[in-house]
Image (cartoon, rainbow, N blue to C red; front, side):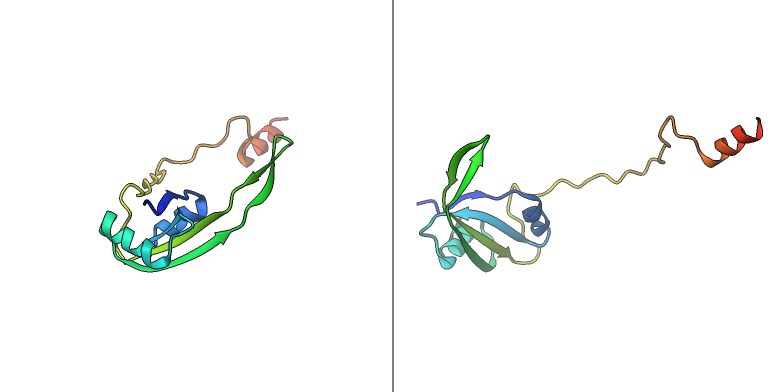
Length: 119
């Protein structure tokens, strides 16, 4: 039985990935201990802590049509320092070293002073 259903890839979850915290949707029958053993067996990772949150089902509307979002179970898994879940490394963003260009069509202070002095 597969206890880990899918990862949650949100902005908030991505911030935690840098610190070794991963957010996963898990099966309703999953326990903290079973999640830790699955992470050890499948990915060979050392789990420091597991926190579980049960999210209730809720009513939602999509394009004015009523619907429902099923109940879910989230697990916050903290890995040992330096370990990462394979396949979830965030790409490094390139720092822009090029000089900033001024937007076209906008006058600078010097251009305004020159245009008033010429009149």
